[in-house]
Amino acid sequence: MTTRSLRGGAAALSLGLLLSGCGGSSGSPAGADGRGTITVATGKDLTRTVPKLVDAWNRAHPKEKVRLVELPEDGDQARRQLVQNMRIKSHAYDVVRLDAVWTAEFAAHRWIPPLPDGLLDTASIVPAALATGQYRGRLYAAPWLTGTGVLYYRKDLLAEAGIAYPPTTWDELRADCARVQRKAKGVDCYAGQYSEYEGLTVNYAEAVQSAGGEVFDSSGRPQVTSPQAKAGLRFLVDGFENGTIPKKALTFKEEEGRRAFQEGHLVFHRNWAYVYALASADSKVAGKLGVAPIPGEDGPGSGTLGGDNLAVSAFSEHQATARDFIAYIVSAPVQRQYARAQSFPLSLAALYRDPEMVKLYPYLPTLRQGMEKARPRPVVVRYNEVSNAVQKHVTDAITGKRTVDQAAADLQQALSALTR
Image (cartoon, rainbow, N blue to C red; front, side, top):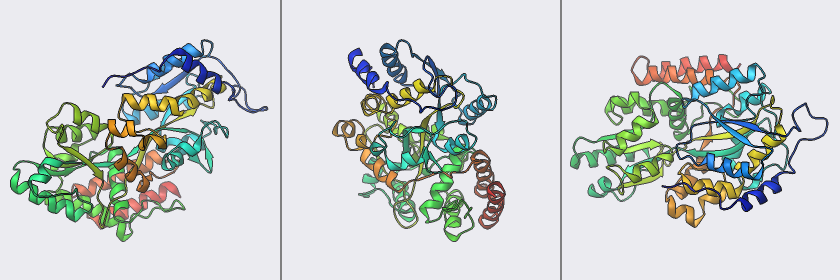
């Protein structure tokens, strides 16, 4: 798929003039009203679309140009680099791209200021995505990329086994696999992301939610020893024990799972929306894959909301320009431009119903359906430590080092200590 730049400098200039009036209020800290060149710390853009959007901004704002700096691809390394930058109050970065779950930590430490009311058209943003940019009732980060886990499946293998629809429950998933494997030898049933990293936290949370439980309740208290939470953990443990999930999936992150599915080794695969374009283009499953909401214990499951948000560094000397640039990137015209060039789902709600977008990415209605039931990861200041605790104790359970009951009890104790 080729990328496209914004059509014409005039359109970019017009949008730039529209946004140029956004700024901070009087009496704000030094830098809050500052204008000038800015640096945006973001992730690697394999589609090379973002640099083209930045070029359009730079042509329209010759005195307020944007420079992109790529953070490490590994999420933990990227977070460490940003945290180190914030702790020394460096003004090296003006706009920072945050994993949706980092908002609370950065806001609580006052490393990012709240965004002014009216900067964004919040009514146009997917509600679940909007929530990831909020902390204590205020918007600190602008939702940009969003999405939730979906179930990829082999339409051809299901059809050959006489199965008309993808599974909506875990029992149906297991039964469908048994029917498929009677005809298609050498193919594994199902896999998500189970290596000991952030993806395991996400897959565990989805299993818990899909069994009717929650990792934390609305007041921030851990609830991982509830019958529903333990049922979610048991789904993962039983999956490895009975072969529903192959043992090699203990090493799977997103890319390992994607390759296994694309090479024809899996009937079902849980992953993010980005897989669709890659698996549809040049793989053994091209033209044979379908997309559905993830299954749950008694019906369609609940995914974990993912995504990336954009925030202004509290230590930026040009925060007014930084806010304007964020408003530009998440505006409807620019999001549409970005959406045409790559398959990462964006925060603009209208894109999920846009006929052009749905024709380009047929999975969008399914993704929106899944996002309506998706939940954000825990909004806790010490999220990184919380995630590490989840990874450790869930790994102990799925590798047989602890029983489900013991792993759940140990995890409850660890999370209670971290959030007390």
